Image 1 (tube, rainbow over the protein chains, first blue to last red):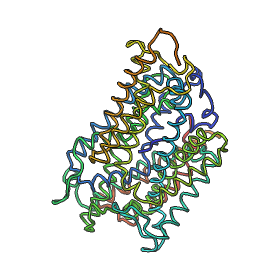
Image 2: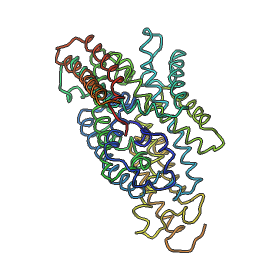
Image 3: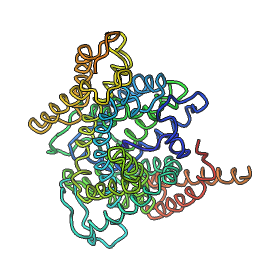
Image 4: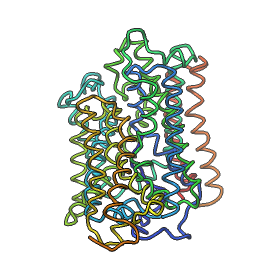
Length: 467
Length: 59
């Protein structure tokens, strides 16, 4: 799972990151489908996949829920990319930020940027945590105490130093831009997927069976904290910010046809299906062979090193690095958007510092199943507003791109429509312990409906202008 | 870059990918010891990162 890897444009040349930001992508800049298949396959085989598979085991997911729930959830994610994100992206050919500015006004884009940047930092922090578990393997056992799934605080000074070293290196590279790292990620993608597959094969060999159904059946007495529906919704919405939230408009606007949305299936079914199941099998081995408590879990570095050795450790570090780096870089850009006086280097350093602080605390990585649901809950509703603007505005008699046509700097309808469902969703999560991945869909639908209703009052089409 | 160098990179890259996935498969089938598998995978990783930049074009 990677919320923000490089786009085909970014991986090729940094110049495109600053091109067509405030205009539709022209015909001659469009890219063929190969760029998108490779990009999606690569960006969804990230360091955090090593956490998510084992976390399913820790949550007591049964074989049917895991194998079929992931299948259905990933299919729904692909369909969302294809029929919502790619349709809008290829019709409008604008970045999310510019499209949002045209609907919501520049001030609201700043607020969105801040929320996005902050969430990026926590996500990159989780990637630093995962990479630090690999660094620990290069030291004698016990020098760096590894966190478990129940760890929330740093495990000791050595752990803090490991996170500082990894995070500082990532931040330093991010301050230089991320062209090189994006290229390493591009080259590494096929190899990284095979390392995940290798982990699965080695585990099957060690456990002496190829009966994956039996292996994924939790041992007796394991409490089931996630259901079939929970897994399906997790798979569907773990990248909600990208598809339903429309962040991938910035990527897919370069596609020649909306069919490029099908390319997301490479990421979903290689990274979010096969890689997750292979990573889950790693913990199954440790539970069955070493008697590890599934709810305590085992850190990815130890499991991967034990299974496939140094090649696996390199994969954990590279997978974390190549995905954390653009995340830190873009978090810096988001902060720079909020504070235009800040240089890009200073903004990236600020973002990197927050990421390192988040990475030191294993709570973020160990609660990844909940965190990505909350991430989607906050950001996906913005996509619903774009969906209403693109597909429904003309049909229901509200103005399309109201901020642009009326010169608004802050569209209150968008703010209220975004805030109300998110606040209610957060209340449901905190007070009623609702699984976070159930929240992005109702939040987005509610946001779209509230925006539609408010816009009928404040921005009806073909009426007098009132700001 | 000459065509010959690119062909060599493609050959090495493919060999590295095979060297990454074949040893675990052989281990699973109990045809290769664990240590040897890990060593071959490490060599394959090194070969891959040397060959891939010459082979895979970034669009």
